[in-house]
Image (tube, rainbow, N blue to C red; front, side):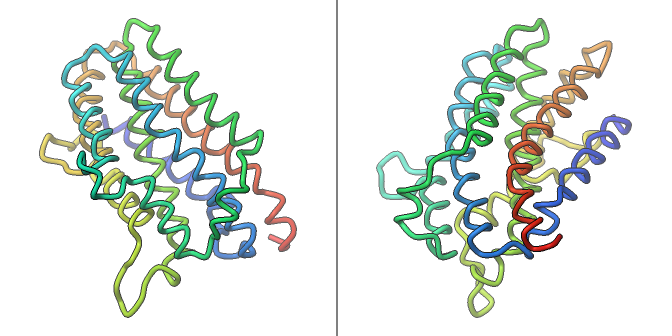
Length: 244
């Protein structure tokens, strides 16, 4: 497991250093808003991606973890509490994104491709003999670990705007940065771990122990990273405009 941790941590560092994320504080306001508005569409695809994976999972322990995480996106069945997606919109408004921008923005070709390719990756994983391992690996790395990394970088830009009198007022980005994070290594994670990444890791490591090879784990994490990288690559011209 320690070798896999080193492999995974290398991918995480590569993502952190994507030029757009590493220079997020240098983007003009309009370009930063464009990043957030496009990233919103990827976030909207989170729940259908989880639903698709749940349809294809047969491992009961993995299913329970995925169901719990999915249900946390809608914390109140009576309609009195905002969903996580509504919390995201609230943060966007506090960051200065107008309702007109929310209404008028459409997903770009690169954003659509990132979403479609994610659904295709999940669907393809379901057709393998070790589908459960593949599906949980995707959910964990694409949907949790790398999301925490993204939002940690975005928070560098958001923090001054969403913190008032020492109070963190973020309802979506900062909480997801925290509760999606990888906080334990694959070698030491346990059922007592609390974040989404670590909860999924408990089952992923158990399924990995049954495999003769870890190649599929590495392949899927590489592909999940590429989905994220391709999404952010569309904003590289914004860095050129500010001379980064």
